[in-house]
Length: 206
Image 1: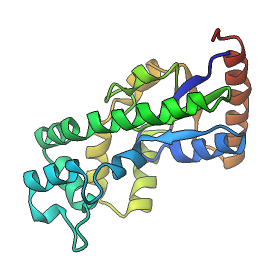
Image 2: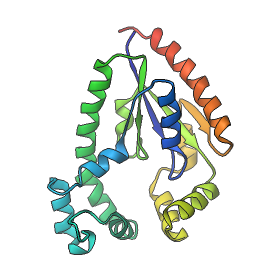
Image 3: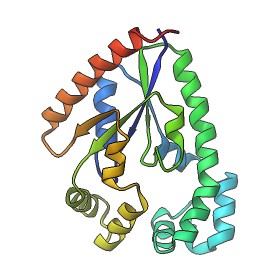
Image 4: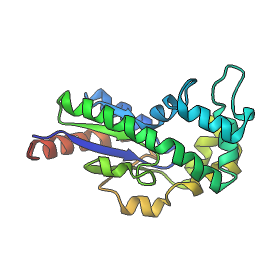
């Protein structure tokens, strides 16, 4: 048996973290690219210095940390700036992801998750064996994000435009979870996939 890496992705506010937590209840570990993205811009990290040099003090808060809201407003208003930011952060995120994934493979278990909002856009799909898409309609993405993050609807739409279109993401899926229903429905879908992934891992040569 070879441990499988399952890539989990979906648009903003699709429920990727909720899905990962349901898998965790079944004993499945995961690494979250969003958490790593925050780690690499902590004070003292080279990426933070690069970002501050590019955008100036307006993206650094009073404690010397990245003001993510201010940066987000800048980069989603200008695609060239977003591309620059990705060129600085994506290689560093991938390097740490590879380290965490190696540790999870070495620890045993049938499979583990790589949770990433930009699984395809960043090339991180090359690190996984299967791709699980968490899918919700765009209108639900917008309402959830506005309610959760208190951001303007226009900015949410800009974020959605910067991500892979829903139809293209679904076309690249090996598996799909429809997350517009109840939490019980989500848990049921996760349990079904857990059984399938365990069977696949058991049949995969080491």
